[in-house]
Amino acid sequence: MRVVRAVGQGLNTTHRGWPIIAVIFVFYAAIRFFAVPNDAIPPYMKKMGDWEAAVTIFAAMALGFNYLLAGTQVFARDGIKESRFRFKGFFRNCNRLFLRQFGVSAVLCIPVWILALVMAVLLGITVMESKAYPLTAAVIGAFSAAVALLLMVFCALICMSWAITAAEDKGVFKSIWRSILFCVQRLFSVFGLLALFFVLMIVISLVVWVAYAFVVEGLRRLGLDGHIIILREVTGCALNAYFFLFLTSTLMSYYLNNRKADERYN
Image 1 (tube, helix red, strand yellow):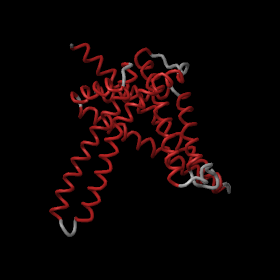
Image 2: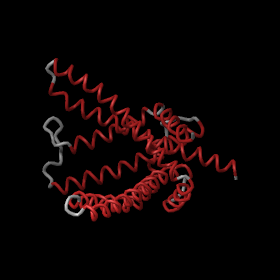
Image 3: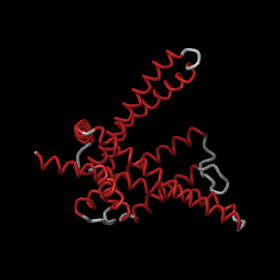
Image 4: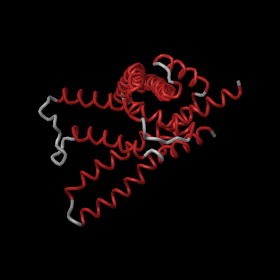
């Protein structure tokens, strides 16, 4: 029940935060403008080498993501706790919590990337060996499933650590430790929350892209094919911005509701 309530409050908070969605949209649009190798949206980094451009874009995304994450978490916290959905002070909160949010991401994303790489390698070996050595492939597949489960645990930890950093105004390692304690008590519930979020994300995306397909067909009939890529990029950035605030608000709601229940029972 708390999972469904968290998603409902997340949606409500998201629909109160259009100024924040606009800021996140601009961030994603800027990243896409520099990254998309297309004549209609020319990248300014095409003179760089591939690796230099990739590292630059990745660093900009990581820093920008954690910077905006700090402000959106506080916006969600104040909205859910006090029904104060205010854009004022957003960038001040981004500045105040940025280093802590980035620290949480840096500490927990390292094992996430390592586990993701290990899982990809194991899955590749499983596919290659499945015909010649089915028993070996089955054993390696079981190991990859175990790694995938561990990867999901770390994803849950990093999501809740983000929320706890803003909700409790704690440092990096205290937030991670509280996240571990929190997730140990309700790990499957956190998995259910994330699964429900991704289901809703898929459903909303399907609806938006179906509408997009109709608009594209209309543009083609009007002979405006050159504008389709612009529409595609704008639609993608808008969806990413919407889901950014939706996810942070849902996680914050879930943590605050469960913390309130724990305090009531203790």
